[in-house]
Amino acid sequence: MKATDKLFDLYLIQNIHYLLQFKGGHYITRNDREKPLRLFQLRMHLDGKTTVGTFSGKYLTKFICFDVDYPDRPQLAKWVTYKLTAALDQAGLHDYAVSTSGGKGYHVELFLDKAISTDAARKFYALILRSAEISESADGKVEYRPSTTQGVKLPLGVHQKTGNFCGFCRVDEGLRVMDREESTAYFLAVKKTNHAAILAAIEDERAYDNRAAADMENAVSRYQPLTTYDQSESYTLSRAAERYEVGLTGPGQRHNSFLLLARLMNHNGVEREAAVTVITEWLEWQDRRFYDSDWNFCMKDLQEVVDYVYDGNLTLTMDVKDLTVSFAEIDAIIRRCPQKNHKALTYAMLVHSKRWAGPGGSFYMTYDQMAVTAGIDIRTAKRQIDQLAKLGVIEIVRRNQRKKGTMIKKPNVYRMTITGATPSPDEKVFMVTGVADMTDCIRFFYDPKELRTMLPRRQYASLFTGS
Image (tube, rainbow, N blue to C red; front, top):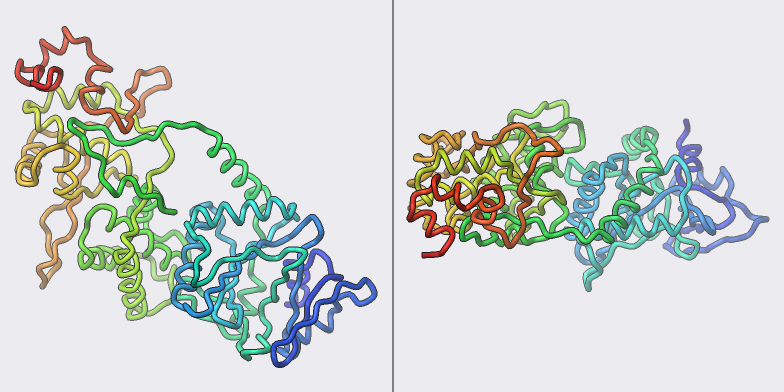
């Protein structure tokens, strides 16, 4: 397919209403059935002589454009574009295209296999902005395009005021703008998105907004929720853990993976320098076929990403899911952990692991987090970790390792050994909520008389009478 045909196929739902930009930057808008957009005008567009823009239909559109416009903050425009693409990736929509507007902004676009209503397109636009947590500011905004009143310039042309080529960008290479030849090849390979996926995302959002779901928070004896648990960001723990465990699964994921993993490190209290070390090590075992950038570029990009995440204290959000503790898990804690603090810390680590452990079950948890959630001091947490490992309720996957030749410690990694098979649908499970603690969980499963025979007298009194 030729580039002109592809432009028609992806962008034009009608050829009556369009705009033209001429040398110097001035526009004219046409909406005349007697002067429709012709093929020769698209050829002039591709030759850089006259730039063409398009509008949506009256009720339908076949593409959605996020117009990123931060005229005096080019670096901010980049970060906003990264956040948009990450939000689309998180929604499972990977066939987007990013192009430069020719000025200091970007266009992030999805092309649909079937036209959808402009109302649905606007709802999806708003959904993605909420997911990426992007709002209008004094520095700029992300606008919806196209509409019946606001058009958008087509790619592969020239901004007639700046003279810049409106080429496509490589997200995994720091939004590098490809030249005309590379951009054209990239454009011809662009795929359409299933319109049903867009409509389903809107419906899922509507259902979620209408669902009065309880806030599923961690529960532990004398539990205090971590501040990182309360932040709402457009990245989830399970996705971050999966990316860390599984690695890159295809091209175009490297930069967004840096963003995701940097948030994961910050979420779990890993120091900035250690975060760079961990993500660097992660990149070293990735398939080189999945990213084209040279190593120096990757390291520069990684440092910028980590600085951005840590300067803004960006973390992660938990998936919208029920956190449950099974009888087998709490019974193992009671029977295998002799001391009260053993029980509290094991329970804290168990529920923490349920939030973000990767497919292999490994997870990060700092001593500070252990102390806060279990209601113990850091020295006690450090001392008890070895005891929990000897008791067989946790496995220390990695601890106190330093990067060779430095004093930088790698983050500690653990795995729970008391988790079993997923409970059957009819099996009784304890639902973890923000106001619950380990005592609530124990009371849920056991009769007080039974507990008196299982727990030492002082533990029973401490847990159930507060004495």
